[in-house]
View (cartoon, rainbow, N blue to C red):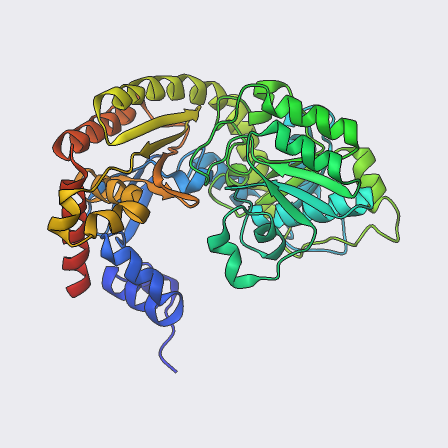
Length: 461
């Protein structure tokens, strides 16, 4: 057996040793993938929007933990709240948790409408798993309707209603009685609801994050709400990425004054400090599902609602409201989107800029490769099909010290999802950096060859 690290030694390991540990003990193929585009940097410090690598170089984090860092990195108010409960029992199941009860109370106060009863777990996919089970036991029905290009997680039940075959095909057969429809398509939903009386719920994201930051038509959520009411079907909203101020409202469904039957949350609930996921529902739905001593413990979680995670939830909700982060996201997001929108007319590479608040996506056109494919031996087509977003993200990372990434279900879209505490100066730096990238790489060929050169160099290294 090799010698074990202590915590001081673990904090001192360098980029090479980190990569070796990943290769030997975590995910060797992921290391190769990240190394190709020089994404395997070792970051050793973080504060708000800024992270610092082991060489002392600072980067702006415009990926924001995929929406987990609405309050920024290492927000001291969250850390202090967790520290205050350090002497409380963190895990003590044969009791009622006071900190947990306060966190659930606070969530009920900020949630839309009559959403009042919560179940706390550890992640977004766990929240979705719980919501699926809740909808089935409460209605006595089976079918779950979900949207194509959606993303609800990668555990078994959540994966069954995640709308991309790439992630599903290796794990078939998945959960039965799940059917997909196009996102934003009310006639398709009507057809499904009219065709079966065995539908327990419809689950969707108010904005599809991993689908490419896809914003549905105005009024879509209201129409879904009305159709679910008409057919006696539960409406589940996955606000894991859109919730807690991200889109300019506390929850994205507030833009249309829609109250779902079940709402899933995670990511920034723990303030970027503690892993927390939850769903919140209406009392009558909970009571139908688990409202007896016989059924009270049908769905539980060992770590769900632990004192430190609950303290992080309490501090996070208070911070979001006190600092008016929803308003910050609305104002900064409008400024950011207005500036980025000009790229649609200015650069052929940019197909569309879209989003709401500080959840923004830039989609790139797939150009006609023509002579470039001949010159590159088909490299342009191959790279642009799956890695166009990654190429732009790689250039931002390596040349401008800006961290971002493409969306999982549409790799031709890069996301801009910074902490809601981002400054206008930092937003301007990203806008100017993108402008320079598009000016210097007005043809896709230049960008492709530059990215290919980086990948080849790192591969041989």
